[in-house]
Image 1 (cartoon, helix red, strand yellow):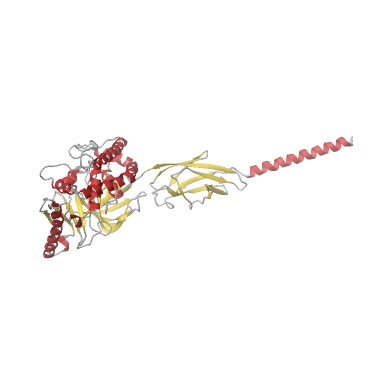
Image 2: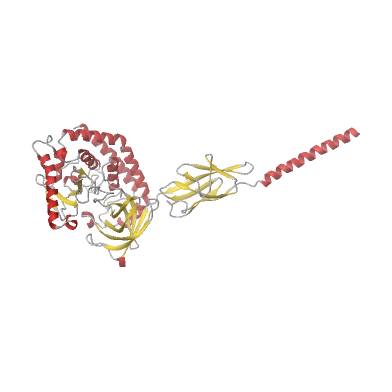
Length: 508
């Protein structure tokens, strides 16, 4: 009997122990509440590229947020009851830790007792562009390309640099483009400033790209120049423009072509920036002796920076220097004349490649054809400029038609650019250099160019749509609401044009 009593009490003690252990374990679990992420956001105070605060939605281990930003390296702000938060083994500190959110990121939460929970973040990126707002004094209209109007300017960078507020003057600009409904503009800030990451200057240009259905053909041409490392090629920043409170459209901000340390870096008084252009509308200009090229002096400013006597002396020297080059090219000894003593042939070849790949026939007239030199140096071609009528537009008024037309084509008796540049292309050394530089570009940079088309176009999808709503109703607008179709047309045309140039250089 006692044996059964002992067994009973023993079982009772064991059962009680198991009960208390079970209760204790339950108490431990109960005392360690579920670890959660209670909030997740990106603050503009911590992220200079953001113009506002973005708060995420958190559900079932997922974090989701839509962000307007071109910068994807951001600092997150979050709240949690976890004792530790990590990403790929790296501890995360709210308001401190920087991550690359272009990739999938999983936040791992750990409690004091080692329990874990994971949250994967999904960011829907939208691509903003900068916004420039110009308010003229007394809301005056901008109806002249000769007279500046005083104005306030406010730039919201949206990740393309720093915001800017200041005073400026604004006027119209351009030749044929000034006569179109959507106007291009020239800005002259009161003070030098870094604008959207570009070097500190006063003078800027807003290109309207009215004829361009993609709103990026000038940008593509500038990119080709940059990839070729052609000196002093401009930058291209897409912007939305508001004038006196009214949306004016999608524009491209770029540098004014001028002499300065950050632009065409030549000597202030002894350097020379020339433009060959049939518009022929500068104060100091001349037609060359051999080819009747319309040569205009853009810099130095002979009218304002020199006395009339000194200006004439300088002007005579500029003409003499140019005629040395032209005489050597026109010489019966060409190409064995000394013309290469007067012009940098590498810049010449790169310049011609840009114009050939974009089929910019304005070089034939010539129009907007720039060249520069220091007093004792050679001429260099550039900067490149004005591609509104390129990409098979000239003669057809339709972009992206034929891709296999030659760059040089006769345009009538005024086609002096054709005569001048085709003469240079007769030199076998120029042809060989052309073939070499093109081959390097084709192998090393063509893919990068097409990637740039995707990059730029992806950032102006909304801007293009907004612009189309304003300007599609005008008779001359050549755009399309199907933007992706036009971008694919551009990429296909560039690819086919490159194939055409392959055949062109093989026939040298």
